[in-house]
Structures are given as C-alpha cells and as structure tokens.
Image (cartoon, rainbow, N blue to C red; front, side):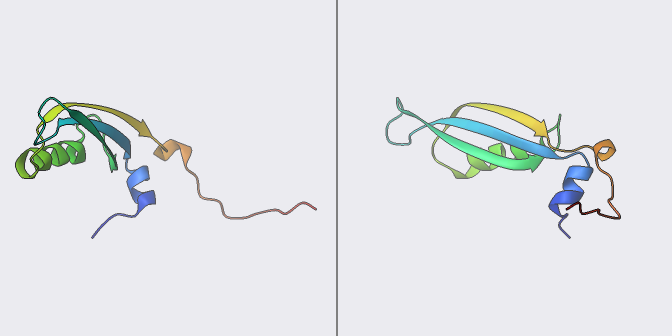
Length: 89
C-alpha cells in the first residue's frame, strides 16, 4: 500500500531534484540534460539511486554526471493537528 503525500512528509521524506547530464546516443560529443523530481529520504536517497540504476540498465544515452539537491518540506515537530477554527469579520 502506497503512503499518502502527508504520511511521507511526516516520516521524513523531502523533495529531491536531480539534473542528469547525458550523452546523446548518436552524437557522443553532445550533452543533453533531464530534470527528475521525486519524494525521497536523505541521506541515502534510495529512489534517486534506483532511477540512476534504471537509466544505466535501460536507456541508451550514457550518463555524464548528476547533480541534485534535497529539501525537507515539513518535519514531525513542525506539524500539529488543528481541532477548531475561529472566523473574524
């Protein structure tokens, strides 16, 4: 069963954005880029490395380099349940 986005954020997942530089299959001297973004967990980044392995196994354009950044959007200590709401006129 897949976790919801909120459950993932509360368990420490954050957004990982990676830019892949790869060589064109027919023109090896030409570099192209591809941007990938997914919820992942730092510092191990299992989803990022899974995607890199997929790329190397299935795609023809060999990777030149990868650069990435990771940002946690919310932490368990920053979230609280709201039980009521007041409306001011």
